[in-house]
Image 1: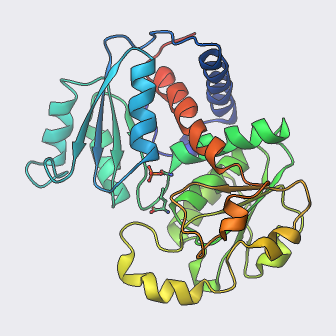
Image 2: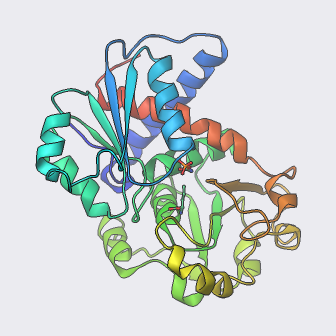
Length: 306
Ligand code: CP
Ligand code: NVA
């Protein structure tokens, strides 16, 4: 049994297999085919933070594949406080076939996975967001045909989303550049894990977004203040001045460059409305790909072949 907690745990060939499966499922759905590959299967979702895309795309994926899902919010079922994480994980494993967790502390997901006897999927933690990055590379592959050799510049915080993207890029032979204020690069814990997986490599961190986008095929941004960091919002807004993805910055990138954002977006902060809704933006196709990529993850974890 495998869990889906970090992209770093998966080989390039496994990740390519997931992308190919997602592409096939997406094409089948466009033809009106909804094979009931997960008939009778139940997905449990436990979220400590709000979600639109992750929750709905997983629930829709299960419904379209003939299965069902049960959503537990953390008010009713707080993780590890009404009962211990091992008890909760072992109990839920009696009822469901897989679990998606969205947590503050990453170690909560790790501990849950240790005691769960069904696959656990990371639906975002403070550390990373692997389901998002898989959908992102699917979107980039659709746009450019091939991932190898493409350059992705992430303008913003070296956060959960940026970390999973950096790993996805490394796995697929893409160049990743982080353009972030000096104090908002990748934390040492992430860099240590990254270097263990990719010896001798470090994702470049620059502080000049203009230089960083000059050869970018994809420009990606995310909110400056992630969920759980609200107390830092004022300081972050100040620190990220000059890091907004606006029309002037996009004009410094090659004309074919695409814009991506994991969403939710704050137009007027990390991105202008003109860029988010402009002709280079793929943000809604990207959001849509969450469901196709996650169908592939679910089928793969549950051992279903098509
Ligand atoms: N991108 C993403 O994970 O969105 P939600 O927070 O709405 O799930
Ligand atoms: N970095 C953001 C991503 C939301 C999908 C957050 O953690 O709030």
